[in-house]
Length: 313
Image 1 (cartoon, one colour):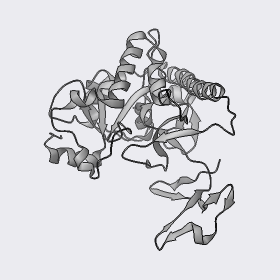
Image 2 (image 1 turned 120 degrees about the vertical axis):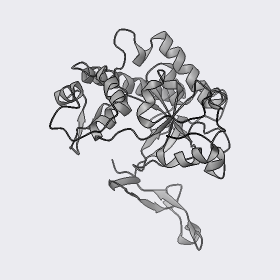
Image 3 (image 1 turned 90 degrees about the vertical axis):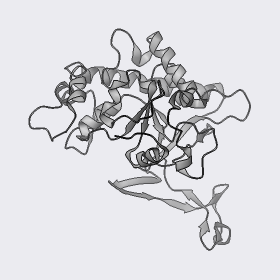
Image 4 (image 1 turned 30 degrees about the horizontal axis):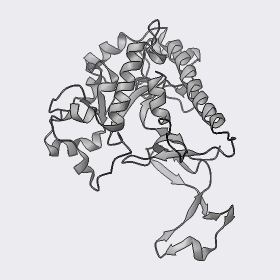
């Protein structure tokens, strides 16, 4: 499928567009060009959307050193995830504590476990969309989606960053797909600041959005973030989806990605369960036992937190 925004090589993002359309026909240049530095366009291709706040098991990813996406059901993933620190693999420098933690979750069952739950999570999302189409009495051609954006619109891969729901004018509206997947246990929480709540006014300056030191628990209970955290806790306590008691998800998707990419985690972490005045080191995320209590902060944003008074290692 052709993409309207793509990354042909790492670090380079480009877009493809048409002149703006009206009822399917191209507008005149006079209408498209609004002024000397503004024009209206229509996307030429499809958009990829990375849903904010969640992380589901991968169904395919690139093995170390490869460029092609390989299904997690492939035996090579079973072998790699049984020992991602084997001799001959590209180096991956991790702290001893994180390395030892990962070893408790890595064996010959890790790959099959991830593959199985990835299929289940994918089907759960498909079922939600299919049910919404049927409930609204629409078709694939007439069904519409509503995107709610946070502070950032695009990720490094050219995907839109958004909370996604079916488009519906009348109330009550269902919860966004992210919240529904978290509530059913079919996605893991992955809260990344500042994109934690699209339904509040975005600060003009990103520095103004940094919370005051020691207010983590207050932040954790508010708005979409608070609702999502409660949904995760209930799903976890109920053993739903990825939290199934007999064989829960062993390795989080972001862990699989950084092991395969041979790139240590680089997002700082705020513990939402206490009122500490510090961000934790990126390789200490596992010390916060419940993933709904982790708020990740990109390394490029860490200086903003430090300037606000937070302790940043």
